[in-house]
Amino acid sequence: MTYPNATPNQIEFFREHGYLVVEDVVDDNELDGIERLCDVILADKENLANDWAWDERESKEERSFRIVQANPFELWPELSDAIYRTWAAEFGSVLLGLTVAFKYDQFLAKPPAKSVPTWWHQDEGYWGRALENRGITCWIPLQDVDTTNGCMHFSDGAHKLGVLPHRRVEGLKSDILTCDVDEARTVACAIRRGSVTFHHSATPHMATANNSNRWRKALTQHLWDPTVPYGPAGGDFYPWRIVAPQTESTARATTQGAEATIPG
Image (cartoon, rainbow, N blue to C red):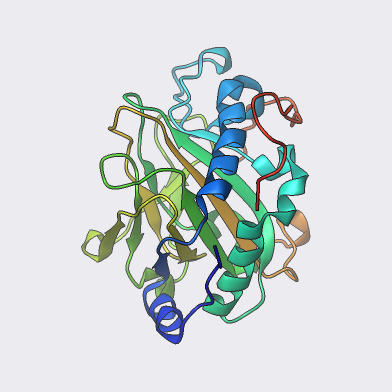
């Protein structure tokens, strides 16, 4: 499969609306490779992942993992050579109008039956003021997604409004944040496996709970202007940012049951 270049219409749409759907772009072989690695994480989620919706009534040992969150690149650094990752950075750079590079990824999986939504938020709300308008995210679902199992929802054009005040989600121990949006702007993006979404780092977005009978799995790639430092070096995290560590250290996954690289 040949990965496409961004068209003028796609660039114009993204800059006006703050998000974009790119259909039928990731090859099945690559998706299968991503999913094998993510299944390794799911099989050992207590050691390799966090519960991004950790209920405050549960102990660390009894977390129900309503949203499984992990960083595949930290476990398999060789993923930097994956074709889908190189393409996302190139495509995202054109959409944003400045050069971005891969910063980190997140595997986000929602179990059937006991899932919760990913609440409205902006990526810049987590990343801080230094990233203002200089980040973009590519979201890759590993199955067809719609409103029943957790597709992406965007607040149309709201990336132009700046960073909204964020707060902790009541009842959670994890570091997940939320903000209030104008619900009238909401656009739901149901897409097929192989399609992806991009969104601006200031675009408010959310994903519904998984009410299907199988796991909803997705890989999120966060792409930044590489000249922008992160954390204390970059300065200026927003006052609502919190840290809620759930693991003692980051372990390196073994390749049991999965290839260590994604076929390209």
